[in-house]
Length: 144
Image (tube, rainbow, N blue to C red; front, side, top):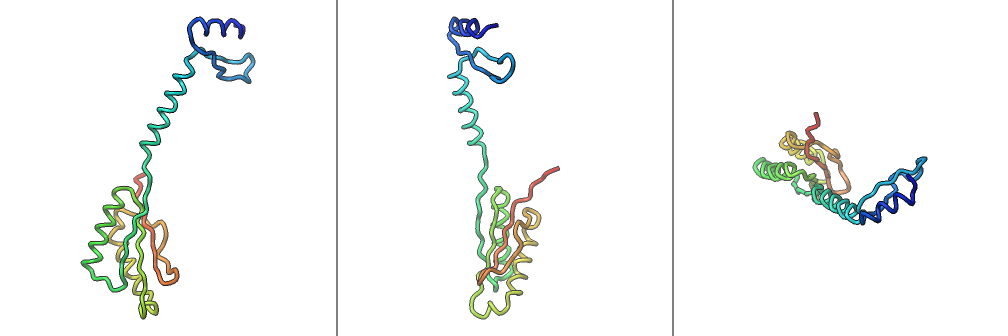
């Protein structure tokens, strides 16, 4: 039908004539309430934003001289973070003579990772950066 006739029908119904595909031959149009359409579209976008999960970075500080019990407590804390879907950054700050033996701190990091391996995967390997050794553990994604 002609554009003028379609426009007249839309006005009679109190609705808008919206071009769906203006480049097609002939152009494809739809009679609809455009204000209502825009409102519902913004409502869907708002709902989608509300349902998004933002991934937070939690940090756990360890020590080069940490004992087994304390390491287990830090690992349990990290497991809770990982189960909530947050990433965990495990850090060890080397002080004084500890800087001469970074392999001890690396061993602590490996022991820590073994405790959280079931719930997380290494996103960034343990690495010495200045006086700090840091490792990032991300939650395990169950993709099948």
